[in-house]
Length: 220
Ligand SMILES: Nc1ncnc2c1ncn2[C@@H]1O[C@H](COP(=O)(O)OP(=O)(O)O)[C@@H](O)[C@H]1O
Ligand SMILES: [Mg+2]
Image: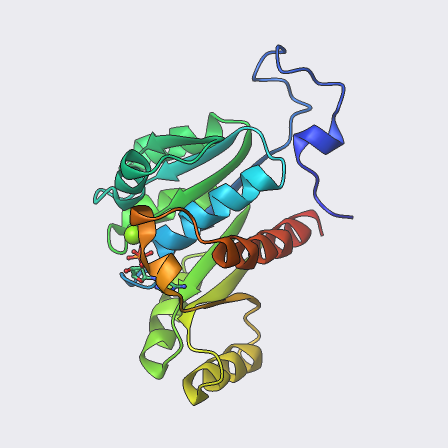
């Protein structure tokens, strides 16, 4: 059964009811990789936007990175239906992840292991953005080792060059390692533009497919 956002699932719950209503479905998706520059912030922002399109309400983007790239993205280019919460410490990220309802997507820093662990410990699912190319594997494995064995997790290959050997090898490597591949996002100028442009339609669709995979895992 697919995991349903509150709109579909609990149509009788009106918006005026208290936010602590226990019937409300909540979920925390953490986006993490100990390496920087792989696509964490891009993935977080696109997933949050895809969740709004899928009917989740509220959607919270929790920025746990002191560099505040998600927060800066939002300042330049806010996304309708997404609330931004800056939480760049162990304590604030823990609180942010327990104090919302609906769906939250959490952007994490590349270093700062304590903050990352605080987020991973509270994750309902973890997405690990990565790139195709041999040097990337060890960093993903290091990230996987920080994730609890009961927490569903999968990799998303970002800025992928379709049809290249690097990409084929990466897919084969993850398949052999039995790490689920939750998505392959093509390299696109429209995605690289970040907050300088509107969210790129093909990117939103690619990330919507990732979100659907995550939600299916969560319910199973
Ligand atoms: N699908 C994509 N196509 C093109 N560029 C991408 C794509 N995904 C990410 N990027 C670019 O890769 C760089 C690193 O991405 P970012 O999300 O900032 O990574 P991180 O948060 O892990 O440091 C950014 O310049 C971003 O625009
Ligand atoms: Mg980032």
